[in-house]
Image: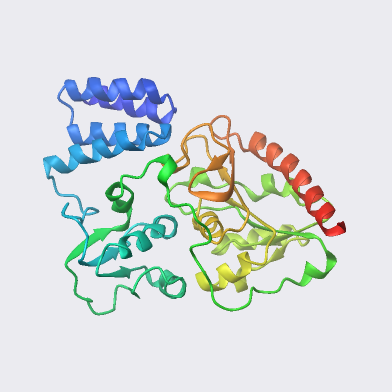
Length: 338
């Protein structure tokens, strides 16, 4: 039986999505775990942009009432209740889906966000809820709780109804000043390494460095962690590691850039939520949120996507990015002259 499920999962990884849908159906008919089959179909539908079909799969999973540590909503309406939004996924997930908090606040009596410690200050300054707490703070009291990734389903989001008004994240204070701003160069920030959760999302800095020689552009390293030391080989790139030690500080830096180039990591989500132009490099086997065959994202109006045409092929994605970067620089130069 498991071979049926394995075949479906292999097709999904290869992005043969319509084939995978049929195989997940066949696997379920062959008595494979129905929740695993539904979860596979859920990913297929999200990749295709068929969100409502994905929510129906979620409904089926919930109807079987198996324990899920990431599911907190009890299915009752949120209207008029004290709601606690728990943010138990990654920082990028929280930034992407916290856009729903004002929608909850519009129908609930009160809304409190329980955020990761690194996001508490930034979310507090963004006025998304009545209060923002973190893990070590006292329980605020609530009538209903919900995990942040459940919010799109609660509102039965479709591609056309995604809350897409940006910015929805704000960092109080002046944007951090970049020394090269006076040169009138285009200021571009780069982040090339994702978390160890999925190493395939990261790109070797050497591959991205092919853009560093484009005249009229100043590059700034936004990379957190020890990977920022890789910039030592490219002294023409300004390492801002010391200026992005907190997410609030990072947001202030991003606001002063003309463009952010990032792999699929928190930096891309933060730039998009701040309405900063951001170009996101995606591996071939991309996450469901980026869907298929799109070079834009309905989640972030200022984002452009650069995809691997096949697994591991960053060169083609970087070639396209460099061409677009030269055009982007030309447009900005014309704007300055006019």
